[in-house]
Image (tube, rainbow over all chains, first blue to last red; front, side, top):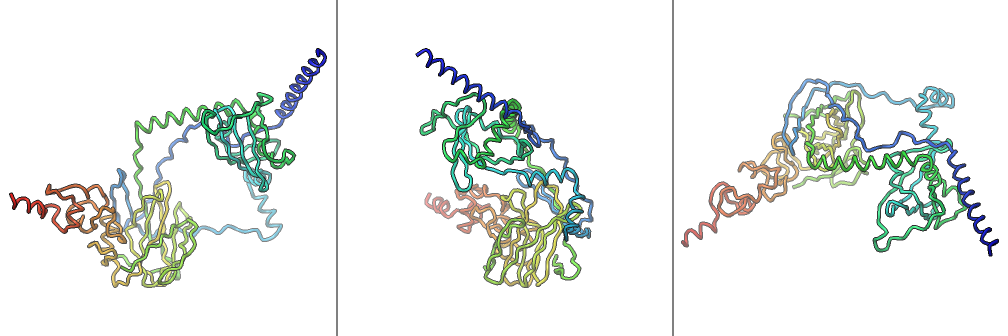
Length: 271
Length: 186
């Protein structure tokens, strides 16, 4: 009996070491969030647009829902037509085109060619676990994750070991106290992980996106959680501010002109 | 009335649709130079065009312009201080000699007055849908773009303004027939 207990304890300890080793190996993966994580801070307001000073033919203005709308008919400024974009004609042209690109643009194209775009739906239960649902090659996959997927929002692209990921997911929140809400299973570890409950566990392609999200979370949990909490706080503050200070619609000015076309323009009909 | 109101939302993927009198090809909305935008459309002969703009695809306003199709391309350029600019072309096939002085919706205001002076809809006789026509509202000092004045009893005769319109009575004079009858009985 004592020997059996020792074996069980040994197995549990061994399993714990093995899980930690796997997680340690995974945490060595090079992970990067591209474009930063939004913390909810609004970008600074854009400066008001200044329209070119064109000779006004006729102007009308009126107030609508508290804002001033000005319509200015102006003389045709005769702006040139936009230059048509050159198209690659041969392999040499393509090479020249590639060489002409900036490093940033090359990186963007590289990201597009080496990116996994995937989508899934996520239902977060009690901010403690998330029910995941996605499809791959027409098959349905479902899993439970011990990650609060609210934290995995606020960015658009990330990179794991040189591979780009563009996740798109619909996310909802619910409570286990609500009728019909599934209870999350017990997870074997407190480290970010998931348990597949439906679908082929051997299909690595189908699991790649979800695996990558967990790898990312293992590496960036602190930053992602802090940014989420900041977004929530900022959103609440913004909501309170807007309730107290309803925004005034911005005035708008539109200039328009009849363009004189060289060969087949319509006849001006203004009275 | 013979006008049709196909809504051609420029920049949105709407397929050309068959119309009663010839088709209207999708307008071209393209980026121009100097932070401008260009709109071009085929001006079908004998067709009268109005142009609308919006920033949110909900509130639409007319440009103070009217165009007559003559089988030629019609082109306009735009710049705006707004964050967004959506355009929509509307047209009527009602035959008219002068589209500016014509009154397509029969509300007593000319098309030009509607788009240039009162900011009302030249293809809808009751722009604010309050039950009274635009021309009647203007003639009686009401706002044709504000439905809230329909229920106001401006002359205190027991009839709201929209009801005065429906009964063809003066909204600024106590001429409620029922009120007069009561007065007579008393």
